[in-house]
Length: 131
Length: 385
Ligand SMILES: NC(=O)c1ccc[n+]([C@@H]2O[C@H](COP(=O)([O-])OP(=O)(O)OC[C@H]3O[C@@H](n4cnc5c(N)ncnc54)[C@H](O)[C@@H]3O)[C@@H](O)[C@H]2O)c1
Ligand SMILES: [Fe+2]
Image: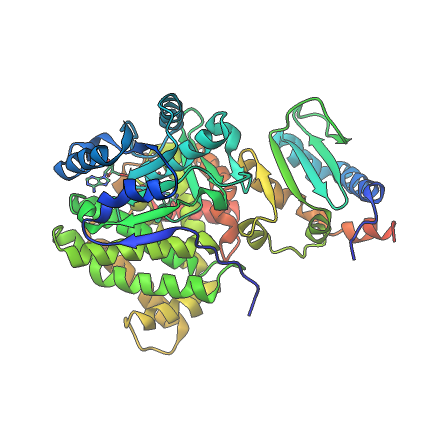
């Protein structure tokens, strides 16, 4: 069974999650320091979420289309994203087997991983709100 | 057994004198006019001169020989532009890792257009590229079978990563005659790159398999047995063959399971100081292994016993014997044992911070069995200096 019934449910969880990350002093300051902009494309159900830290002051989060080109783009199934936030994905294997697609400078995408890891702790609570 | 993926799409052809068949192989795949990517050093040798002549008599060929050591963006973009003008529909790479990595990214541009920077990433190539043949002249990088390429961005001082199952070459031609001209020092250094591939592939986290282990283990045996002879007696065709085939086996292993901390730190140094990849690995490998020791003693010990370096049943003792034997091998081969020997300038704290940022976000790092903090990385660089 899919972790999300539809796009609306997926978006609700993702927005709550990224809002929480933005509120977290440590994570948000590291993200802003990196000045990264990154779009996540999800499928089954479909969605697109962009995190823009390029101005170094404010983390902007968009759902849907945007009018700029992000530095990094990541593509994956929504279920894989759900398992990722639960800390259940073998990331090296997901990369080797092609389940995660990353466009753009790979080191920028990988530098993100340790930064957002603390969010694994509050994701289960956020996910619960839709079940 | 844990889940794994093993992928080895490149057809491997081995034999003395078989490089001549490259055009024929490409024709079978439908290519009418190939671009040959190679370097100036190689086209000066008699063997390569006559090979090119022979290929030109068999079919249509455009030669691009401006690849410099450490594949860089300029060569990639120039080669792609010219090959497009020349209407090439197939790619031959004749050279070491620098040439093969250049050829792979040129192939992406020929197939999909745009420039190299637009195609960086992991798994973001949508479909097959043009037919391709790799003929390694070092033994080596394993790039003739690997699905990755690293291209240096000189402006940024870092290596860009390209990875996709479609980057693997259609054919690899392993012809030991082409390795004979490789100077002793580069024979040793590129052999150490292959040894590093084996020793990193054997201890990765979460991606190894009985396939990758078997390939890496036996490749190591061949390299330990034949690398000194290949270096001391360049003409010894058996030693050249064994080390060449072993380096391809090592390439097949890491292609499906990744490498580790030694490659991550080595890529960072190579990006900043243009140190030779294999030589840098040779310096860093014992340090990387000592860092991983507490997580990988059992696997290192298995290697030590398989190589008949010891029969000791204590894993920690056997693992240490492996590291010491490796250090001895590196010394016997006349390779530098520290970064000063690679002409790396003293690492001040600002430079170290830059290296740490590059190394810790290098794709190789995610496969390493033990997570490295910035302090760990600094310590390895300092110990290796
Ligand atoms: N894609 C991969 O899987 C992979 C793996 C490891 C390393 N690499 C890359 O490979 C590059 C290093 O490649 P390399 O170690 O093969 O060296 P190289 O290709 O940079 O060549 C080094 C020098 O050796 C010379 N040379 C090569 N073959 C020769 C021969 N037979 N006779 C005389 N001279 C010869 C070249 O002209 C060059 O001057 C690095 O850029 C590294 O990042 C790629
Ligand atoms: Fe390597």
